[in-house]
Length: 280
Image 1: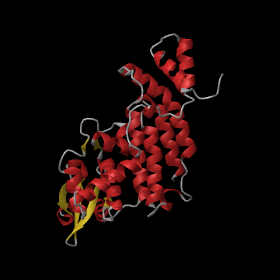
Image 2: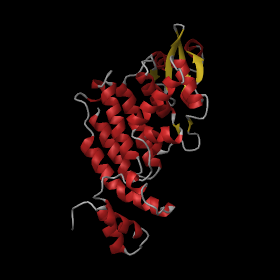
Image 3: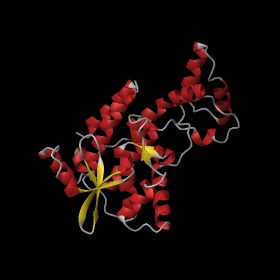
């Protein structure tokens, strides 16, 4: 078999064969697309022909093969596992970018993660945002970012580039966008690793305030939350603590593993489980 990735002319021909049900043709097309980078979004954007929903699904499935290979190849766990990340936000964001490229369907045009975060930070600065609370309003008070109530377990919620482009994510995804944009603006925003609902903490006039990014950036005085009789002592301790990038990454990967299992994507779920093992 020709091991050279398909050139643009061949790619155009392969697209026309996507809906061919002949087993030998389907196998050959899949083999050729498997030699691509896993992301044809920029090339597809130059084509006059639009793909049907079924064609998009077939193509994305074929491109998943090289994306899985790229994730396995490029994932470099820190020596010492998740605990070694500590305050290494640069390495943490690099791993988030790799995950983003893996979860991406390979056909939808959107910005790379770091570029999308940079642009949000630039827009916020242009709007005069200078505090963590102002950034909260900028991101969550309007229509820019919302909680994905309808598809809470959609694996794409862990693709922060997709979340920024589409405007929604799960609690940890929204909090991560908030924290990573905040770091670009030199703002103090901490993660709160509460069970079942990741949140953030900022400080207003010296008082700790907990932010529920999934609930439109709702503000809660930390002292008020801690008074709840429904909380156990360990839960109160978790609210008081700030969480480091390593533990955030473990939680995100656990969420992604569950999401892939719920979506019936066993191969992707196993791959994420393997990534988790590298961080133990």
